[in-house]
Length: 385
Image (tube, rainbow, N blue to C red; front, side):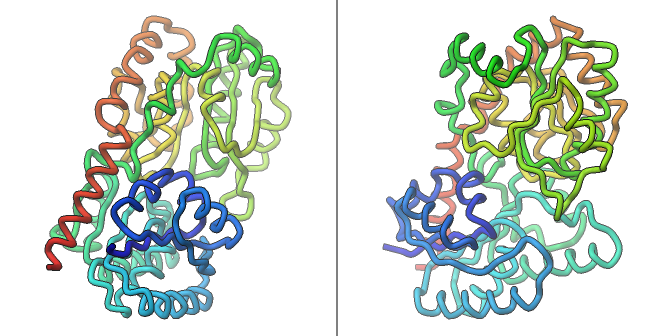
């Protein structure tokens, strides 16, 4: 059986961004998962039934540690001789593709799912641009997971078009619409959870799911919601996700409002976000940059319309006026206007909600993405013969 190595920077990316995918692939390949955080990685490997190899990777710019990781990975790949090395996330990409190139792995694949460099400037942007170009140079195939990312890569001249392709309709993993299904939760379940969180039953509930950081548009979201709630006390906002004050902190006034506002609720990171979607009315996702956001697909599958920014991925999942609203990035006033629309125009809300699940099930069902990726692997291995 051919050997397939999949690499991400941290195990949570394997768990959430590629959930179930490696378990599916093990029917066709001997699969090895590589990431940092040894204990969490081993727990993931046990759950998915795949081998694991721990590698010291960080999400920051750490050249010395990265060189050490390249050398350690190179030795592992020389010993294992995989047919395919497939990386995700920027740090895993540069380390994985470099080591795989030196080790002579024939198929070196990298998926692009969001680029931190899009929000960088000055010297940091130059460094990140260089790293991105180097990653693609060492790769044999590059898979942007949205049309917007594909166009961005071409515009920035990071690599030639012949190296690029999009798997399926986009997304790195699709969405399991049987798992994300609103019928899984009864009215009693919803009432009970709202009561537990002390969210008023009659409130129109907006939800955000993701890291609570600047790049996700949280500063703008809190400002817009706070302003609207001054004139409308029948709305609430639920924030599901962790703060990352060391990497991308929020403004002090944003943190203060989150802590003190009576209609803003936080529940931290949740391994299962479905119950929180089930009690919400609409997703608000004002991110600055994305690849192909799972959260927007998950919300759609749970029957929620979404307010998203006009960035790649988001503007492919959401069709403005069909299953959600699209607004400019970093525009607090536009965000205010859109959240006001959803909670004050029942016919608009009903129409958007009615289309939300169908659009996701038609285009982004998980099995479709897995089958398309398997076909790509088999195509590449056929070329090797």
